[in-house]
Image (spheres, rainbow, N blue to C red):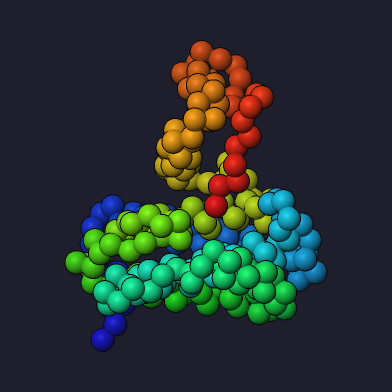
Length: 217
């Protein structure tokens, strides 16, 4: 019989699951606030409408569910067949009716939640592979989802703010972003300016010539 609560009791995993579920609730709330005719309007992401954002978030839940299934069964089930298949899926999803888009966002989130809930405790350490080719433990899927839903709730552009996001999430997000920057030689000046600002040595942030922060996710 399927578990009615998470089978894992690992404190770190439980905390990440809570962060992802809170983010999902926030995203769905912002989506619910949008009337149907607003879904075709531009989001805060260049080239994407709000429908693109909703489709991406919905299909991301399905993709992460495949990783959890991989962890549970040991049978490789990648997030996406290829980068082009992922892009095509999002473009197709953006053409769905508003009702279909809302159903996609909600039902895929429920499915992912059930997959997490029923994953045996010993399978959270199973190795899976992200869409970028990184090999990570299945436990990483909770943090991956948290980033998606919290950030894209802001990207909907209907009042979601970074100030609404949990402080622990923002701290980890910055660590992720700057960790990625540290592997890019062109980002060194921006990291230096950020470090100077964060330690009270500068009134500036990361602005300046030579580096534009890339879109995250």
